[in-house]
Every structure is written in structure tokens, then in C-alpha cells.
Length: 454
Image (cartoon, rainbow, N blue to C red; front, side):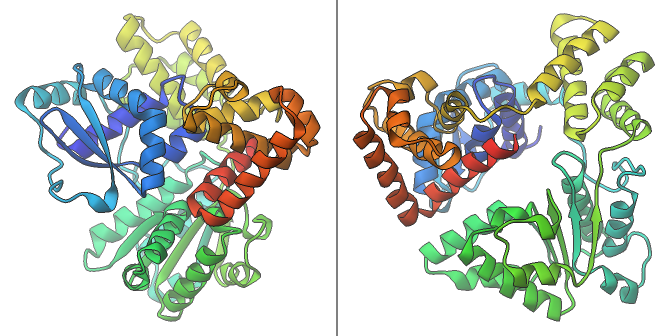
């Protein structure tokens, strides 16, 4: 483990495995943190803005401290700052001797991540067209420039966990290897949105334009995130036009096809149609088996063929779930001294599939999801506790219950043992809040979107 960046990746993995951290909470608050420096027993982490800094510290400060202790084997302090305020924090390799030894020991057991290259991408019937297009635009397949212009823009879509990000990263890796002189930018729809919001807030849109409109390759993951965000779509539209006119390569991914992205500007939708689109389907059995065996190999896990086959047979629709199951198998063998077996695989498969089941949108589920994002318990939200964080979560839960379930304020009040006028005021407060605070609006929208798709 060579840097604080590597250490923090391991800490994030530890947070993901913490049962108290929901997927929504992890994606919104922990995944976006920036590792800034680690020295004198203190890890400094950067958040995009003060709202996210305060919320992450209050909701997940203790969780992150415990995750660092799990990874390193000794307690440290965690400090949160706004990423733009990181003066004197330019070193990410400031490990003490003992910290270096602990990190090196840990790294010898960690092979869970591997380079997202074309060589490491497992091809099959479900993704061969997307793979072919991506190798073409990267120059790997020796396509001439004239044929590559046909694939501009390239739009890859398919359900979460099927390898779209791997393909984007593979393009980035291939182009950087072949043409280091080219400017390759990889980002996500969420990051693109956050950057433009910050640029407008800082009155520095020039730097934003300079960054994105000078790209030779612009690779944007999860473009569906910009839908419904007027300012972000406006910026993306002009960025797209400038790059496309200049003959620069644009590659986009989404969880659904452009025609199905609600609240996407029609002028953007039509521009996606200028190039080619390819969908990525769930992998067939042979591809799933190859993925499981490759993941086991990278983890140095001796997985018997019957065990690999049962995992591949039962987990069918998501590559991340397949790899996650192999990760769990590795963990069990490390900490229980058990050898991989059919019975172990069955336990892991059951856990994986139960976690993947869709859930009905109930009031309890809304409270749990809101609580997970803001680091409080559902029972606290229902209580009369006036703690600032709990009060904010309570108001947001009331707003979401009204928006998603359409319940009357009287019925919502019954859930919280309060009168309907209190519910009306809370709902109105959140409406005003999200009109003024773009970060809060994105947080509420994300909770609602996750409720509808999970």
C-alpha cells in the first residue's frame, strides 16, 4: 500500500461492509470524500462543501474512525475539511513508521481491486457489442479515425453492476497508454453536477469550462444523474456541442437508454442519437463463471470448480454481486480458517440475494433510508428528540412520505403522534429548503430515486 489514497480505498471497503452503513448513505456521503493527508495519527478527509462536511462528520465520523482502526489495527483521529480548504495538506504519503508497517501488512492481503482494463474485462454475448465499440473509440482495435467518428458519441446503457464503468475506465487506460499527449477526462454525472454547482457558487465558471471543453476524450458515467437539473443540463449541452464540433470523443453511460431518461432535455436526447448506442445485458452462465474464476484468481483464492459453478448458477443479474460473493468467500476463509465449500457458498449466495431483493416503499423503509443518509435511527426520527440532525431528518422524512406515498398530513401526523399542522409546517420548511439549497435538493432527490429503484 503506497499512499493514503490506497489506505482510504480499504477504509471505504470497510465502511461498505459495516451493516450500519446503507448503500444510499455510503454513496452519498462516504464515497465522495477525498483523502487529503495522513500524518501524526490524523486522517484528513475532504468534502465537496461545508454542508456535506458537517453532515458527514455528524453522521459518519465515528463510523470512519472505526473503519480506519479496523484497517490499520490502531486508533486514529479523523478530521473533515472542505476540499477547497486544504492548504498545507499536499502530502498523501505522510505515514509514520508503524503506520507504514501496518499498511504494508494489510496490502499483502488485499487484491480485491484490479486494473479496469480491456484485458481484465470478461467478454460474452451480453456485452460483446459494447466492448467492440469501446475498443474502437480507444484505438485498441486499430479502427481508423474515419470509422471511429461513427461512434461519436458512444452511449452505453444497462442495469447497474454489468461492467459499464469498467468499459469507461478501460477506454481511459488504453488512451492514456497509447496517447499520453491527449487530455482524457473521466467523471460521473453526479461529480459533473457538483462541480458546476461549486463553480457557480465560487463565481468561477471559467475554470470549469477550461477543464471540460478542452478534453480530447470526455467519459461520463451515470449521465442519468443530470436529468431534471436545469443548470447542469445547460452546461452539459454546451460542453457536448463544443467537443462534438471539434471532433473530440464523447462516451456516456447510463442505467437506461436515452429515450427512457425522464426529465432529460430533448435537445440533449437528440444529440445522443448522433452516434451509436449499445446495451449491456446480464451475463450468461459461461461469462459469469469466467468472472468468478478471474476474481478468485486476483484474490489468490483457491475456489474449487463446483463452488465457482454454484455461485455462477445462482447469482445471475449483477457482476458486482458475483464479485462481492467471491470477496465474502475470501473473507470467510481468512477469518474462519474454513476452506471454500458448497455450504459456505450457499450461505454467501443467500445473503447476497436477500440483500438484492426489492422492498416495498413503506413508512418504515422511508424512515430507515432517511436515517441511514443522516446517520440517525428510525426510532429517533419518530421520537420527540430535538437534536438538530434528528429534527432535520424528521422534516425530510415527512416531506418524502408526502411526496412518495401521497399520504394526508393527518395520516402522516398519526405516524409521528403529532397533529397535522406540524406535518404541514415541516413539509413547507423542506420545500423552501430545497428551493434555496441545491445540495439539499440533490440529497432529497437521491433518497426518493433510490426508494423507487431498489
